[in-house]
Length: 117
Image (cartoon, rainbow, N blue to C red):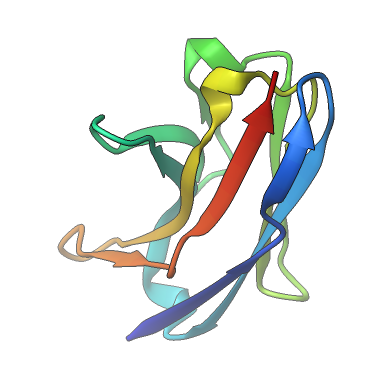
């Protein structure tokens, strides 16, 4: 089992910044991908950014150049630095960890990010 605890969401004006954190615990040795998803009202959950096992990083096009995903292995913590935020970034953001053996997904509780115009 893997437990994920998120923090760092909130309300910010357009153009502002927020940093999300996700602390992982449990069987983290079994994880091959960690990332951030988001889900806006009425929309499907989408993968925003991820770090895959060997360190490769992927972003969706809409956040490239504005968001940065990183991790601190010593603290077992994943981060998402979000700059130049836009109203369309408003969503619940979820930390995700995927188990390598069977691609089972673990989820955090979600944190609300609201960007006002």
